[in-house]
Image (cartoon, rainbow, N blue to C red):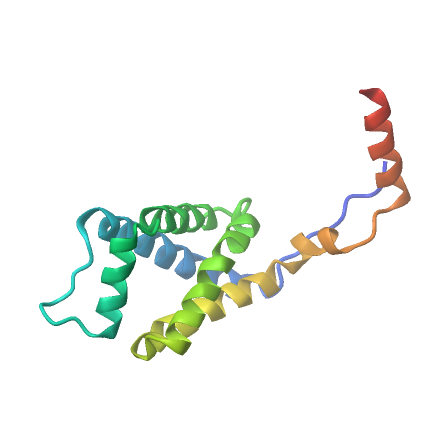
Length: 153
């Protein structure tokens, strides 16, 4: 049996603080987003460009409820150390999308979008040892085990 690979969290104290703050943010905004999906977006009589885009998204039937649900699940999983590496990966598409949105369209929300993406990228760095096996070559033992499992079927 090959020795177990050690998975460390880089900068563990800072990673814990960032992870918990990001989890609270994702969980809270996920619930808020699901509320927008069910009740509509709170825009004024003469919405600005961002409000017009949100109304257009609502009219197209964009799956905003499921985006909120996904954020809520990712935030919930991020509270627990065992599921945090999975939650970090789940948050990446959302964080990258928000980065693009605030960079190219809603500049007034840069103060939220940039730290959001930075937290996700930082946590990806901190948990990279958990993802390293995906990028490494298979070991002879893992090749033998996979062929043995196929032959056993």
